[in-house]
Length: 136
Image 1 (spheres, rainbow, N blue to C red):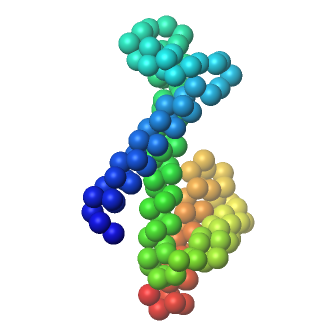
Image 2: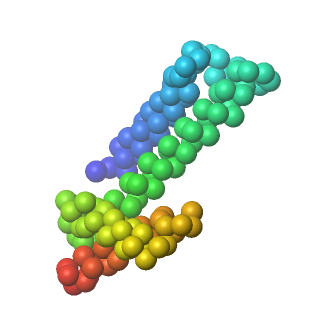
Image 3: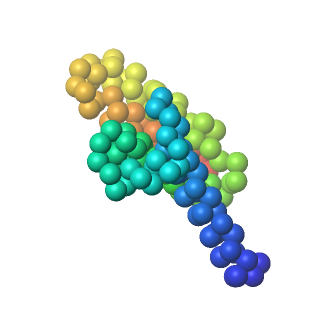
């Protein structure tokens, strides 16, 4: 495909993400229009607080999280050289659950940080075991 066509598609996709992100800031229990979103940038008050200090960080976090999940999926599929590779198929959730249960049996669930840490270790062990089985 021609480079110019790819750049045009990338630009259109980025524009769509920007417009949808702005539109998502108008949705909530308090109704705001697109004009209110732009006015909130330069004003103080309730509109500024709701739109810029509450909704904008949530939108940015969702964009960042979506990019992180997409990157993780691409890395997983690249590691296993399989376009159908997914965490559920590879045993990542099962490894995380097994580690959490083992941590609870050992009494590690009393600390606030223990459950996420044991889940992360179990998920990493699950993906490592799947990679060993594949021979990667």
